[in-house]
Amino acid sequence: MSDDICTELMFARSVEEHISEDIEKENTTLLTTFVLTGLTCQPQWKILLFLVFLVIYLITIVGNLGLIALICNDPHLHIPMYFFLGNLAFVDTWLSSTVTPKMLLNLIEKGKNIYFPECMIQFFSFAVSVTTECFLLAVMAYDRYVAICKPLLYPVIVTTRLCIQLLVLSFVGGFIHAVIHESFLMRLNFCNSNIIYHFYCDVIPLLKISCNDPSINYLMLFIFSGSIQVFSIVTILISYTFVLFTILTKKSAKGMGKAFSTCGAHLSSVCLYYVPLLFMYVHRGSSQADNQDMIFSLFYTVIIPFLNPVIYSLRNKQVIDSLKKNVEKKYLKFILICTILLQSVGIYMEFLELL
Image (cartoon, helix red, strand yellow):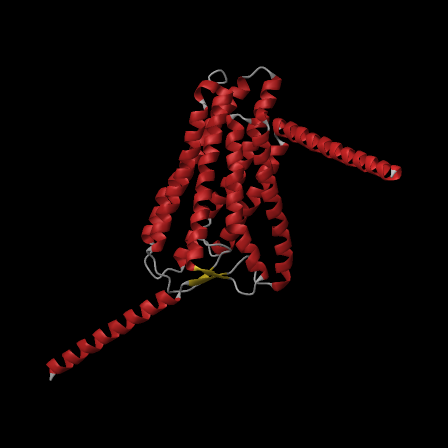
């Protein structure tokens, strides 16, 4: 009798396990669509936020692409510093275009759905651009260190070949970092919830809704993302420590002013970029971490790409002079074209009168 009962219990347990496995498989296959909570759930704010961020996005695109065009067209700006600055503007455009269009779409649409492949593509693009920007900021700090601390050796050290190598390494590093996190994300199943408490697909909100153990993902984040940030910050701090000592030893007030003006813009950009990231790590365990992370993420994905062209343009005399020259050239061309057209119209009218 007891053997029969044991057999029945074992059979019931096996049936239960099969049913639970089927339910789990069904859940994991159903959760191929996520819902982004977005910036706000209050309808009265959505139109205003849409208009504000649309204007910011358009200015970001025009400002960064305009800076790239200015650097490409002016031979005086064909030096390593502006080579890296142009690529930073490109990465800012890339980062903003990865996040902002979907955010704007979610503000005016009722549904905030995003499909799993689209989510993975957005995260991959975001990870590549953010990591590449970290490396570029470190490279730009090294460039300023060599230019100010070793001005006579600058053309020998910072060659065109080295610039291209550093740029390629920055993008390759960003790509590899994104591939690592993407591959570990792809192994997860999402069956707990399909609601992502964010306005784009970021790794931490995705890990929170995973039904697998994401410990290895957090470990990879700590190892790789932490190492990249520490490397970038240490490189920047060491470079600008030497720059500061060199500037303070300069006897020429003009030289000090020029050094401060060229480094001030980059330091402002670095502070704006890394302060939100550091705050995100400090407040990670608090009860309001989701809302705080969203605010900090908004700052370095939308606001910083918008501010960078302004910072580098207003605090850089060479960029301002180049912009003035280009505007004057365009204005003169416009006046010349208008004059030619008016003269042509006048000649045509005189010809008609003769007829």
